Length: 400
Image (cartoon, rainbow, N blue to C red; front, side):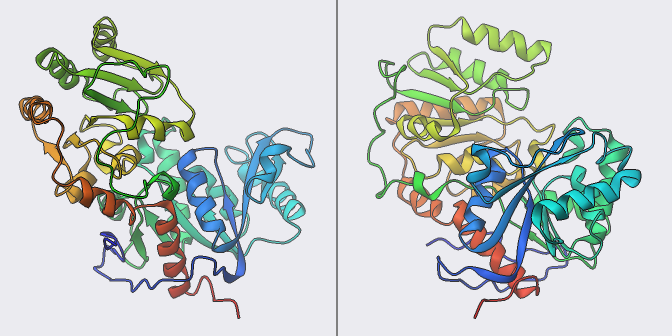
């Protein structure tokens, strides 16, 4: 088992001693109330935590009529739905705080003692319960989420001031948050994104899986770009690689997001090339089929927007499979895994690495090491680490 590289990080160089717990050992005299989200990366964290904690996933809808129960979605993860008035988490939060508090208590049947929040816009929820302890999980640089910057900064400062524990998905993000908000007296740990343990093959793969339909007849070798296809990708680098390595087939799996004019032109140009195949959005659970079938995995991140401080889920998702990983340096967290991937500084290095990969038959000398490393980077491993940290900080206690 590869040791978790971020375990116990603190901006004050404090090292947490995270022990291990039995997989089925639930902890806590307090129930954790998580203000959840349909983001799959939040859901996977909560599903892994639910195996170890008494946890309720609290969801909000906005309206004037209280809905007593949600339907099928509510059964998935101890989910409780609460209808609150419009703008009660925004401009009218102070005026409507008693209503929000009353509806949450009414839905839960008790006042929350321990809140797990993921977004700065959830600050008013924490403010409605000043006696609750708070764990703030920071998933991204939220200044790039399109919310008004003054609002993001104010809400984030409010949550951090309350938080007993701040959890960041990358070391770079923890350093940025520390520089922007006074965290000198806060406990900050790093818990990157991850992949589902069920996705990891039972043994290190010796060849790629068969390509799934409707792309099962694509000629090999196949390079894959999996995930949201938006401005965060270096489309100019990919275009150069497509032109320079004509024997390679390219598969793009994911929705095409908003693109600036330059990137839109590049993507339109790629769509017109016979070697490029855009499959569109696929169910998240189905992505494993494509990840496992690639000959070459491509992570061409730009160095702007949220990328420098992000924890790229698609990187961890590629780890246990056959395809060697060729990446750019747009995301700082990838530098911590340079021993497992080919990390390129320039477009020339990027194209040369792809050419070399194709020339050697996509042979990867670190394939087995990547597969082993993947076991330390599952949502289940992240949940176990977080439970241990919360236990050490007195937020949870072992059940007798």
